[in-house]
Image 1 (tube, helix red, strand yellow):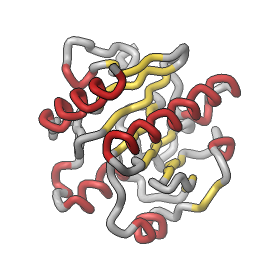
Image 2 (cartoon, helix red, strand yellow; image 1 turned 120 degrees about the vertical axis):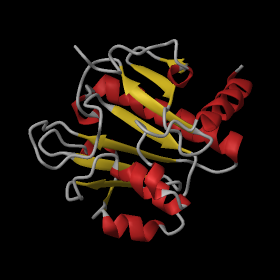
Image 3 (cartoon, rainbow, N blue to C red; image 1 turned 60 degrees about the vertical axis):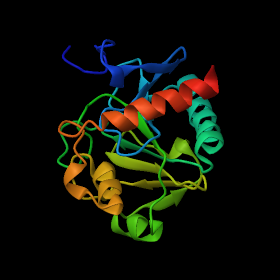
Length: 197
């Protein structure tokens, strides 16, 4: 299978494994728009976190909470967290560029989060049990730990990364395939390793 997450090239600095559990890897992110950008990746090749078993979902939520707390300690604020879930691979409505379930943890807070929520048609949900296998979605957890979900979004690859880049003022640099942001990757490694060692 030709999947970058099933065949992680561990020789690359951006593929440094920060943490590993039974069902997940936590890695740095190529295209780290900011200092403090990690990915939670399912070891199992699935297209969205909606496909997790109950036990896997508990482990996934444990990792989300663990890294929210760690980011708060390191960066003095909670991160935003999102997933472009594509359980329906033949749909025209999708936003991810890699069809393998992964969640972004980003040391960033939108300048005006309400605009992002309205623009992407996010609806507040109580927990991750609302993720669905029937429709593609974007799941978003705000810095204040409010959970959101949308199935009605503009079908742009990497749309959440694009919104962050626009908010930062460099919208033409959102594509991780073109912009690596190696300095942010190296800084993240140092800060995370110092905290967990």
